[in-house]
Length: 447
Image 1 (cartoon, one colour):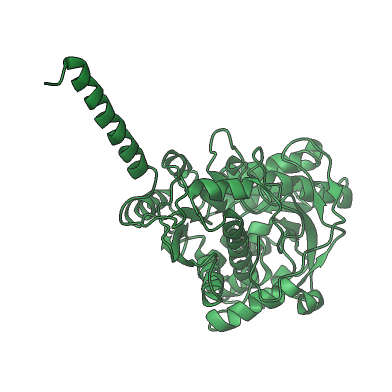
Image 2: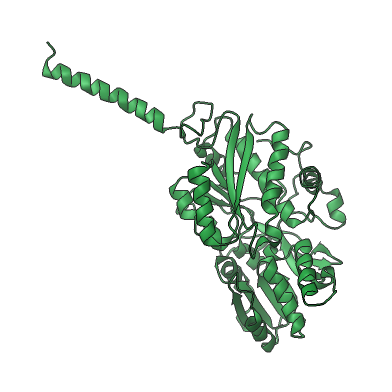
């Protein structure tokens, strides 16, 4: 007959075995999402032996759709190219992206669908400052890697608060600093107005501008709310202030409205437009379409002439584009997978971002988990098509560290000096003298 002590030891042994089995069951992904195939500890939701499922939200419709609606298809085209060339560590990339119409309420809905129903491994490239800020907490609480947000908000570089979130492009504060120094140096003593989106996008950019542009030169500060296309009062204020230069942190549709509004008022300030709203093909197309609605036959290419902006990717237009290995790679992918669309800066952006993700997947290894993905990214060492280096580390989730000022001359962005780097604080602006990496011969990054 078993004693009380014996029965107790037996139950303790049973409980210990149960605890081990429970831990083993909870350490992997849900039963319907597969495992990493390598037996490594960690969360492998969305990963099987032959695939990895990722997702994103984009404005396929709505006020930010002009231009930005091309980013998702471009990223998918590059993933399809990688899949057709063997995938990454034996896995094909399954990219699911959904339309949020640049509406934060929609972003919340489609993000929950991607995480809870589609069971994505990671969010990659979710677009927009006002939209993604509404889901960043949910993604981090759900421990879903939130990579390469398509926005330059400083809020993606908060590893203590949002350890799963990483930016990709140069942040708006850095961009504002570099544009601000150029404006201060080039237009000393001139009257300057700001026109910006009233959220972290525009506000971060203005903070950077204010680092270098003297306050007594800024004669008007005007903002807009995305979705409200009546910017007449803001433009009237700029005209009344007699601004010589308008620096704009705006999405493409509002950059076009700004330009057409100045023409309507009979003023012609120098426009300095952040990268977000200045892609030559997108902006000229919008300007031409809007002008046609107003009964004008003016060419969009005429309306962007002389605009000043900045870049963090190689120019896809002009003589340098013909010899750039990255432009050649992305155009090759475009011509095969997206032959019915026009290649522009949004196409280049989507493919460049996808290339970076593929490189991180390579570094994360075959035993893929969410933890190994984040470790690979924080390990740094990524190279690619950006004009200045990435700054990824355990302490920095911000992405590209600088930009190059450009001016539109005969429809082509012409560099105005070297690319430069800085930080999102008070560090000086430093010319970047490094060499742009060359695209791999087959277009597939390696770790």
